[in-house]
Amino acid sequence: MTRFAYARPADAADAVALVSADPDAAYLAGGTTELDLAVKDGVIAPTRLVDISRLPLHEISLIGTATTPILRIGATATMERLAAHPAVAARLPLVRLALLAGASVQLRNMATIGGNLLQRTRCRYFRDAAEPACNKRTPGSGCGAVAGPARMHAILGASPACIAAHGSDLAVALTALDALVHVRGTDGPREVPLSELYLLPGPAPDRETVLRHGELITAVDVPVPLEGTRSTYLKVRDRASYEFALASAAVAVVVRGGVITDARLALGGVATVPWRARGAEELLRGERPGDEAFRAAAEAAVRDPFTVPGTEFKVELARRTLVRALRMTTGELS
Ligand SMILES: Cc1cc2nc3c(=O)[nH]c(=O)nc-3n(C[C@H](O)[C@H](O)[C@H](O)COP(=O)(O)OP(=O)(O)OC[C@H]3O[C@@H](n4cnc5c(N)ncnc54)[C@H](O)[C@@H]3O)c2cc1C
Image (cartoon, rainbow, N blue to C red; front, top):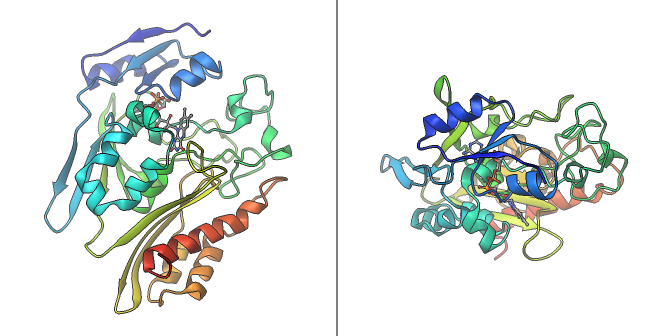
């Protein structure tokens, strides 16, 4: 078992100072990913875990104006608390559905929003310390998943260096909504659009986000969609609960006068990062809801896939998942 020091700082500034000062220190929030990797799987070996779970970063509140409300979510709010928040139930159904489709109620009561966004991939080649080839775990060692067998892996944003899929359902919904991440480092606070937080694997799959070592996520702002927006999160998986996505789609659309006036789309389970489908959104704007427009959007959303033996089926699965989610939100399917 990995031995590590444990610290419980009094405030966020102390937490940032502690992790920033030690290149092998890491934050511990709910611990549902971090402790698995460090203690059970021996995949990472932090020298110090800095517990942020009791910092006063739990608050969930509506800010902004009456016409442009924003939901501000403290980084240590749990997934279950966020799912139960009245503003989420009333105005952000895709966020609620994404949260409730994840893990189990026991895990969601521990798991935090900051930790969810920064959870590590479930790629079994990454999570198995005995597997020699994983560029994410051991840079330069290769990618065991590319040679297969692969299944829960990415077909978008993937490369011969890494096909590990991003596991967060919530991040897919929040990417579709243009969420903004508040971060604090030793240089002070800064903001990062969620769509710019994650890095494609490229030649260095071990670097997963633009965060600098020691930067702490303090909150996430989610613009509340306009009245009249219909949204959903559809997750397709091998079993009905307690399973990661094979493919998922977050959809938020506005239909006025029989025409789609706005569309926000993101895909999960099939990409190395939460996958915003902006080209597909453009195709939908101005179109009448229907399978012809939905299928064209789905083809655009899943363009130039990178498949390996075992992941070819995900091309069609991702497209059908998006078409179905669009049907559900536009009333073409109940
Ligand atoms: C069996 C199982 C099934 C699961 N199924 C799903 C699923 O279907 N869908 C899904 O989306 N997720 C799923 N998860 C993942 C789960 O949602 C995450 O483990 C959880 O959200 C992580 O949150 P945490 O607070 O426990 O983070 P931790 O484990 O404490 O931390 C995770 C990572 O984030 C870093 N970190 C945490 N908070 C911050 C912060 N504020 N600032 C900077 N860094 C931070 C930590 O250092 C660590 O690297 C599952 C997990 C398990 C164990």
